[in-house]
Amino acid sequence: MKHSSTRELFNYWNAQRGSRPAPERGEIEPSAIRRALADTFMLDIDPRRGHPFRIAGTRVCALFGRELKGLSFVGLWAAQGRDELCDLLASVVSETVGVVAGVSAASSGGAALDLELLLLPLAQRGGASSRLLGALAPTEPPAWLGAETLRPLALGMTRYLGPQTGPYSGPQSRPLVPRKARIRHGLIVYDGGHA
Image (cartoon, rainbow, N blue to C red):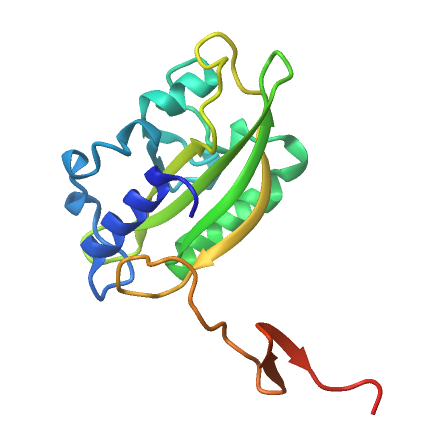
């Protein structure tokens, strides 16, 4: 995670859930994430309506030049990438795992912008996920914010945030290595090919 808002939100969510797959919606206290709040949003899990926004922070709304409450989250994305996004949202809900992803877009004036997206499940009364907590933050603050708006978003590289229960501490020092491989000079090496 590159952006301070996504790291803060993930660490808070992770601390609130403890050893459970996800914290409950009622356990999320906005004042505890005040530095990340402007980049934070919450979605209803409602695929038929495009996972509408329950709430959206001021910087998230400023990126699109309008209040997002009640609008479709999926509707903010380019048409050719919506199926992939819907699959990603379904995975977060069904697998109860978080996701961090790169996002790209352009402003109405044509300026390119890279963003970081975080999606985290929230449980309801110990049951299945009923809401998604997320953050959408530009990697660099755009100079045009407030004067222009974003065009449809495009999903980039994604990474699932597995079932770790401690605070996020960055990349692990030793990657998981498949059985038929070994680590050599920091790389995973698969034996085979030339003898």
